[in-house]
Image 1 (tube, rainbow, N blue to C red):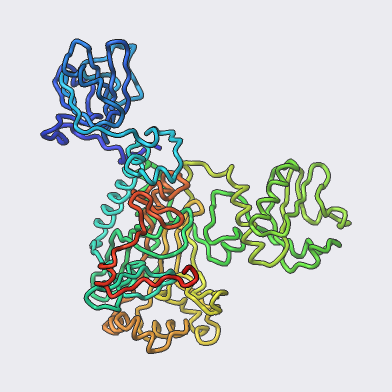
Image 2 (cartoon, rainbow, N blue to C red):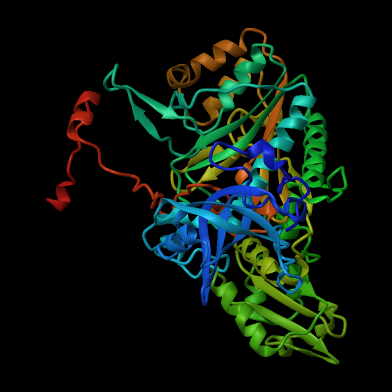
Length: 591
């Protein structure tokens, strides 16, 4: 993927040091006949009779080194050099013969004739070949992450990440925001996920929590009158992992005073417009479309719709009951997705298996090719009630509403892959989420996003008796079916915030113990405020059209939360535990 700002052009003199005059990507035809010194890793080595060629690599590029047998010192040293050795070479830049010019290399017009060659550090044989089309397993790559990161496409991911951060920082600074760092060692105030706990040595038996987000601190900064704040915040959550989640992630945390939703939307849209132009040269159209949560679920089966896919879920409950098919007549919810294409029976069976893996009891279908075809056509005297045009196919699912919508939403994504192009970016705001949702495991209400969200004004009267029907002033920004940012207008009234805590089942004692410091601050003239927090990792993943968030994080964890390179989590010495007043108790079942 080409980028406007990620591959910077440097003046080689700006990067010269006592050990090098130029980087390995700086030399060109204008440097012919000058003496240079380069340092870097041996990328590749080729021997042709007495003549040898060494490709030396650093972060900035690759330069070809020529070792002539008559140059005694380089020739004698050359025999000892192997791939990934760190070397230093001094020599003269020469123009390559026309037939040897490599147009795919920035330095492809020249080569350096070695006059002096030294090994700065040897390397043992790497566990895998360091090449772009790598064949090593991800587990091996993560264990030797420092080698994996030497690959140019991995480096490119972090140039994109760097440029993303620079663009965002430039934008927010220009809009009057102040960058403030908030604590990572915080008070345990569970926000949905489990806290990572850190024991205190000085006050044994007490714990810090690693901040899940700067949520409370940034609200306090608004109370303090900072008006506009941001930071690139590390957030740590002890939760089960998925392909686009890590126990620690980075978000661009933004909070503003004296604003409503429109202000947040406008700022975020302008920020994304600048970012995508800076990185990709793409003009993003603003404002972004908006959809309320119930409509998103009804049309797409998800609150993270990929709107590049021109397929919607439609209700067929009444139509399907016009026949004598028991599966339909015994169901309260029948929905489907219609496509303007025909499918082979093999492909239909494949999609049926996809639906079954997702939990569907079965996927029904109807196709029109001159005549109607499908497993239930014989149960209808007038099958045309399904209103298919020639060449169209309808997939139907019957059952419990939530299950039907969820599975059809996933099937929609599967069928929509042909509509999703790499350079297409579709933005949409999802708004008006339920403030609360029911937790089946614990049989109680929990916050849909977080409990610091202001309820929709017209729903305030429902807080007392119908809290599950209350909508929050919260919003997500979704790009290509991935939630990129989440935010809300916050509660700035201490009494209302206390009431929301109470709906979750917290007693006044619990509230004061966990959140007393926040409620106390809100009582000192807290302004109306709100914010949003785009995830840097997911944003970079979307920009580069990657499937794996671990590719844009320097030292990521596996899906089981392990750091394979450094060997985390790990045991600690008994002395350290003793200092903290902690004793590891063995599981009695294992003894």
